[in-house]
Image (cartoon, rainbow, N blue to C red; front, side, top):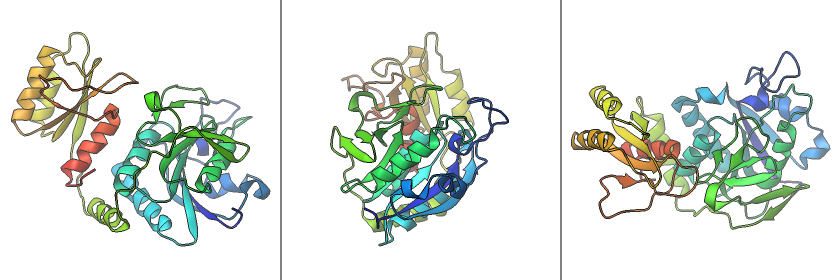
Length: 318
């Protein structure tokens, strides 16, 4: 374990945030370099060799396709190195679940890629970032760890399942019906289920996917609309008129959609707009019915369904 090198990629976020006082809310994200974040942790606590690289320095609410592409390229580069056993990515919490799903879908890495974060800025009296980084390193070094996972507040979440479920608590993430993969306890892992990643992509497929991303000047426009009491199709009609290419509907309950909204989505579908149906519920998946008019998301949340549809429109087969 001591000789396993881990590469830590920084992208900004609250974990790199700084406040002018002891506030855990009133701060500016993405201020501290990842090298400084790691350097502030006592070397003996790192339990082995680490290497840092700054890929981006942004508040994750401002995550962009360009950063996703750059991050995917650097993750794939380091995963391919024989001297690297895993990669850790420091990331903001707001769009962490989207980045995790994107990386897993595009790369399906055979080595562990561990996204971690913080709910308190680096300048807090008691920041949670350092412990999350140490926990992420423990996961990245664990024999048998694989694929993209998220580590926060001592828990390990799968990329397809993880969702941010709280606005300010330190344990801000959940995994819905699937449950967590396990827990980090004093630098050791306690697994409660198997690693959920099926290795279906070869390294060459991952490289080809990155090449596709690199040569994409304009990502497909996919928007999310929600069903609610009194919903109508006006927004859908506007989006179709503005050349939207895909729509994800966050339906109520089992993906149900108001009749007026459904009619607009059917009009959009008839004009070549691809429509996928998810649910706005935080747990459960959309179960198929005989009279379904739209394809279901396969259990993905609306924001992850949007990523799935974008990649499909780009010609990938996630």
